[in-house]
Length: 202
Image (cartoon, rainbow, N blue to C red; front, top):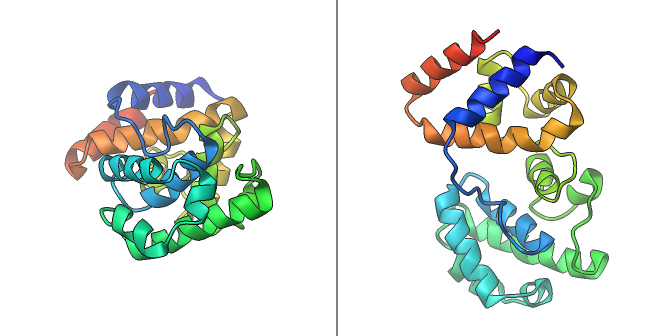
């Protein structure tokens, strides 16, 4: 790995805020997974308190698996696409209880078989539990392409490019660093100016 890329990553980290992300600071792996499912295309500031309410009402994955769908809908209404996500949350909890004794598998192929879990969600979950995962969301996708870490137009290919570029120990850092940076600078002009400067780092 060349030092230029590491310096770019450190600068992105330095300039980003310290906000909590939706997958962080939960006390159980199943909560990390469910919160991450809920967070898709929803701001973390909305997802976190909504997930807290859900986990207060259903404090075990077994209780969640036996919940009423309409009750889940009522709780997670603030998140985008809550009707669809409610079905995924319920079915994912059932799947975890029936097949994995309530513990999410630590394998990407098995994770993406779960309801509501795509590649990005699976990777974010894995990195949060300390396994090598690199989730590519809209922030990671945009920033990686803008500073020249990848030129691909497909998130899975961007993920592969980043995994080739960075040693495995850095994979878990890339998603949170780039998301925090992207969430800190919401004005496109400011974001682009900063990314152009970071791109010039040698």
